[in-house]
Amino acid sequence: MGAVYKRELRSYLVTPAGYVFLAIFYAVSGYYFFGYNLYGQSSDFGILFSMLYSFAVFLVPILTMKLFSEERRNRTDQQLLTAPVSLGALVGGKYLASMTLYLAAQAVTLVYLAIVSVLGEVDLPVFFGNFLGLFLVGMAICALGMFISSLTESQVIAAVGTLGAGMLFMMLGSIGEMLGGGLLGTVLDYLTLSSHSGDFSLGVLNLSDLVFFLSFAGLFFFLTMRVLEKRRWS
Image 1 (cartoon, one colour):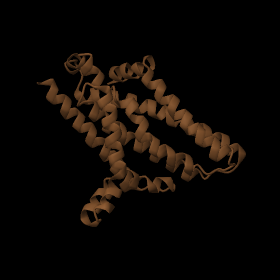
Image 2 (image 1 turned 120 degrees about the horizontal axis):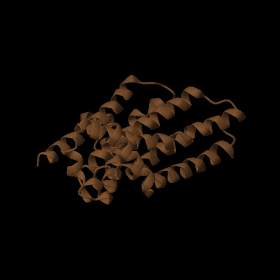
Image 3 (image 1 turned 120 degrees about the vertical axis):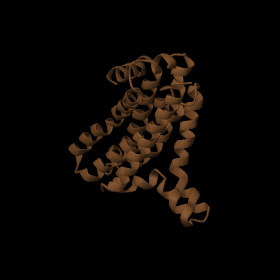
Image 4 (image 1 turned 60 degrees about the vertical axis):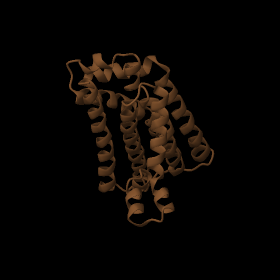
């Protein structure tokens, strides 16, 4: 898995995708940090993280669109699938590389924390609850995007598909309400990513929400392996 991880991480650094993702993330987060924390003289990071929760859906597809679709387009997928490495290591290496870049982007909020801590008191449980929640949302969408990337050889389709699916999973609760609630509404609300990040934004570590995000990512990790396994023997 280490070789796959290094190969994928290196690919982010020699192509524009990684730099575009980091640049947009830093620009967006910097804008809201300056506007609400520095200019607004506030130690509350709630606005910043609430915007980043939403922007994660739009930015993560930049990371995941190339994970497997590029291999298919370049016809290197069969070489990769027949390499002496397990599917779990192959998928895990690529997934960890995307999450490494995501965490590198998110880590800028720790710099913001250090700056504001010098100027005033910060509610640390709320900050790190938001930090964990944002990480888990990114983890879930990265797994979703990786799965969609394994279904197509077009990076554009992979990116748009991940964006659409990510927005759907953020809006399922609202769809359930429009359908009249009831059992269907309860199920759709449970499957909504945003409904499981609320406690984290309050600084509360909810074990059931943590399990949901881990299960969500695990499901699409497993589905990606099944897609590749089918292609390996086709």
